[in-house]
Length: 394
Image (tube, rainbow, N blue to C red; front, side, top):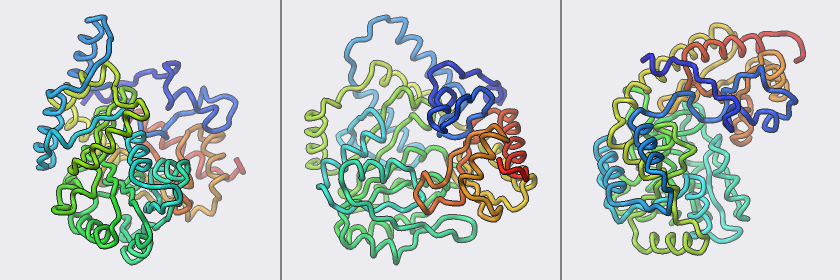
């Protein structure tokens, strides 16, 4: 596990996580602030991926590239092995990323002023993309039950009645909830009843904390699978976000044809020259790296949950069942979000994400990224504890 304990200096590498905090947080100098915000690991990519990319660079010609049948097979084999989900090659559409994939589905299958349902708190682009395309966002807040989020199905169904689309986070970001097959079946039933299409964002689907297992929504949808667009990628799994490659799985040929037409209309069909090499080497050769990384993450989550709740009385941690993100409930600390953020940035010198970013249902929470070496995580916990137990205004 020493591979995941070495601290790499990422400053001045054009890293969004490390080099954009001044603009993101409105501060003059972030040189002494530890970033633990955006979902970006501080671990190097798997050795097999690095070798594949080195080999691609060594070739020295970076012309137009395409996602070949080997790429499709790598995705198909991975889903069969990891999730026992059999998908067909024709069902796969490749895209530059999950966010542009979701945007293309919204634009293709809904009209201006259509209603789109999201269950908050949730990944901000879900509602931001809809709003930017002049759709009406309908919020169905999740409910905390026994320390985990659950769907209020009565409210959810009410919100579906006039909706065209539901954008679903499976597993959940920021809470890390792994939805059960029973919950997924109910989602499909209700969306079918009200004729609502579903985007299932499954980018965190490989990041399961044992003993939890991921269930693709389309896998259990049966005859209703044609209403589901599954968005997934190797980028979160293997820390390859900058490579920018994702997939849409759509079982309905007519819907695929419409998405392909949309891609042609927007000139968005071609991926970068490194995407095929990164994807195939990740899925075909890097499973052992993933298993070791997940063990590291699981240990980090246990450590962080224990230490934070011990060092910051009143702080509660929603322990994730998946992802490397911790959702911290500070509502008992009698602090506003503005006060908390100032304390973190100016006293603790640590950057976390404010819960309101994930919708009003996220007020009173912070999101912490635990995908880093243990020494970095311990430093971050000490900074958080210093900030939240300090009695000074800032």
